[in-house]
Image (cartoon, one colour):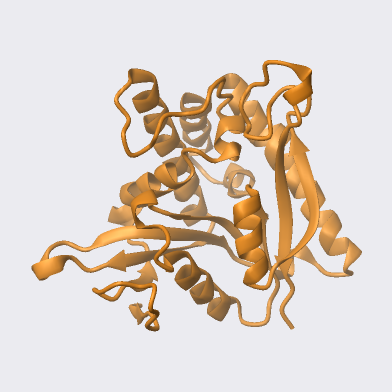
Length: 265
């Protein structure tokens, strides 16, 4: 369904709209996510990067291009599993000028109440699981696949369950914002807030939980009504706070993520 966004001084014309991702748009959304998270410390940690990636807007070296292809394949796999899990993928679209083609500038992937927080786990119940694992292996490599499925997903899952138990709430009665990203060329225009408010309307009074992967995103979510419940560190003694392989123990603080919840009514 097309939903006109409310006007904001920070949103330029033409007016963007938010709607459900169409199947044919999966590749475009995977590309948006790949670019949006290209410099994120979570990407550096999961992909086992030994140095910061190049500027995503000006990649010319073979290693940078290879990394972009890997992150695009990784996000394509995640989006496919989320769709198969019955999740919701919203896109913010800017109509083209002079009747030109519209452009997807951002997206948000949600998991509905009643399911697991990890669509990769749920997809183990469906045909095609081997293909999912092969795609992840091609994207991440053996060590990265271990970090994604065991170290990363498992630790975040246990911590999130503990947060809900501490509040005497059932995690399955909540929405999970699995991923939200805006194309780097379109940031600062309010598109992320539009996607979040659209998700808030759908969730109504139900809790929403997510992980903030940077202090900047943590502060943005805080302004949107989320509270930090706990934090998780990954790769302590191995990687820096940017998720890059550490050169010495003095800088191996580990990649940190904040588990945040908007509790609702």
